[in-house]
Amino acid sequence: PMTDSTYVNYVFTEANNASLPSFALEQSISKLATNPLRTDVDNDGLEDLNFVRVARGNRVNTLTITANENEEVKMTMDLNTRAINTIDKAQTVGYDARGGQATDRSLFNFTADAGHLEPFFFSDGTIEIFGNTFLKITNFTLTMSNNLMDKRFVGTKDRGIKDALPGQRSYEVSLTALVTDDKLFTELLNSDENNDTAQSLKLAFTKNSGQEAFTLEFDDYFMTANNWTIPEDKGPITVEATLMPRTLTSCSTT
Image 1 (cartoon, one colour):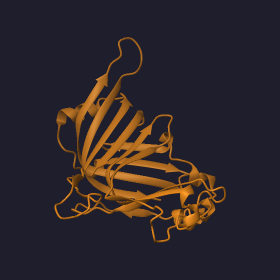
Image 2 (tube, helix red, strand yellow):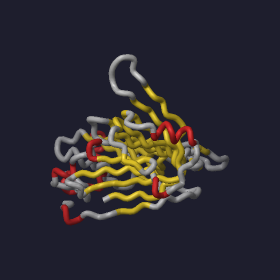
Image 3 (cartoon, rainbow, N blue to C red):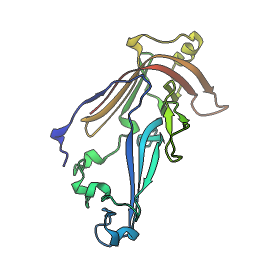
């Protein structure tokens, strides 16, 4: 099991090329009376009680991280899948779902520490824009898109397999904040790309007493819009802003 002594700091570097890493996803559903978490599909007598399919060649098309007030931090992904295989009765290769592990405690990333199982919360995050930490942000969304284009080619001889070509990667940051000064409004009027590394766009979240964290830092960004909502008779003035970074400078997680 994972413990506090096994914290590792990972640093990721953005790769701007024509190839993207891929991974597989396994979906398994079992009606077994015993060990329902392990779908033993290579056992002919149990295949009718198990449903397993494997999605191969998954590449991230769009990834969205959202932090709203009073909520945990959420991440959603839209994947481009090369092919899906179903393990059925006709299969001749032995296959155990979940890597043959019948209990959660046997999984390689199992943890008994309650702090590890807690999500990141909006209240443990900081967002820095134009060299300033904004304290009155009520929601924040970061969208990263690889703009994958589906492609099928003559001569592949299999309609169940497709390829995808990555386009230009794009980033978009949208936020809603209470207005405390006119910094965002001024930056929109300036309309210049901010390439000052001392004024990076930074997103940082921590949990588990600060021992676990992730940090994203962007540069070469400009503001495309900010909409100011001025209530007629009550309530604070809010601004809905959109920023477009061009460079992911650093990405790290612990």
